[in-house]
Image (tube, rainbow, N blue to C red; front, side, top):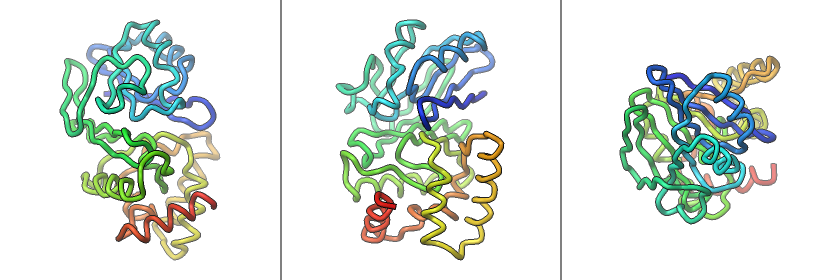
Length: 239
């Protein structure tokens, strides 16, 4: 499977996943349609599916245009179905979804929103985390609770350490400042910041990241209890 990272809007990432045998594709969190359409046409792909991690406009803004143009299906969490434009395939928590091109399991990760989910493509060991987990950060608490977000991150921490994390926004450099402020003696973090800086200097996205690196460097994943997580998340909101 081939993955194309697409920059959308100001700092969003969308992802086009391609089955290279069939040339069929799915797109995850199309914040807008134009950059997706441009790549689909250029690469001569057959867009079959849209997957949405949650209903915020910067993750679903391209749904209806893409569905209308390519007659593709929109897949989302069954408990978020009233909020996702064009949804017509409903998946449940921990449900394995399979078709001839793609295979993934959906996990409910509330916190950022009540109906947020992540998608694990277990054959390739890829995890698309939307706005639950970023590199060196995690999502703001909008609809859910600190407790929900803390438990959602605990769920992600239990995936294998070599899982590749594809996240929803290019927040990594700003997140690194916060992690460095609260974990100044972390040499692994210092090395990761050097890598991040080099990528951004060369206009290379900081996605994906390995879960192992996040466990070593992401201050939110290093929290041992809800109280310390909640305090850090509040501090980050005003950092």
